Image 1: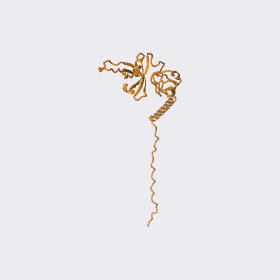
Image 2: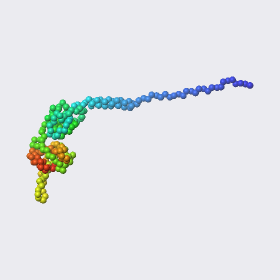
Image 3: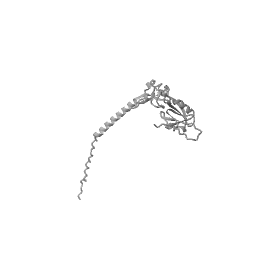
Length: 221
């Protein structure tokens, strides 16, 4: 008997599978330019914000309400620190002496930045005019929300009631006036209105106001 003593054949080891090497990605020119642009924009924005924050100054503002024609006093003013804004010309706090003692051209409310256009040395009432206060009920004036300081109004004289039954064909007299100040009265539904009228009309308006013979009409002309 013949015995085969040769060793069994071994399989050859498999060849290693080559792993492809990935080349590093390159940034495109557009990505690089965008990154540079963002850096520049960020730097400019930060610089602008820092400049605006550091560009604040002290200006004059109203601390209390001041009616048209009233003198501005030291206690009426307050110093506020705000940024400069295009188109605004507030009065620097250092120039307060140029404002104190002058008169308000219009009604000034608290918090309003003060400008030179809002003050004047001309007294109110103007020469040839007088200031008169009249108390009116809501039934003798338009709604108070429709009235404003500086508005032109007509004071209509209520004719005296006659004992005759015939119609009154004579148109009532009207007097031109300007509202200078408007405030709620002490009684419910009453308003106290300071009006500027011509000196020649002032005694008549005063007498009519005392007799409750005035109706205020808003002039749209």
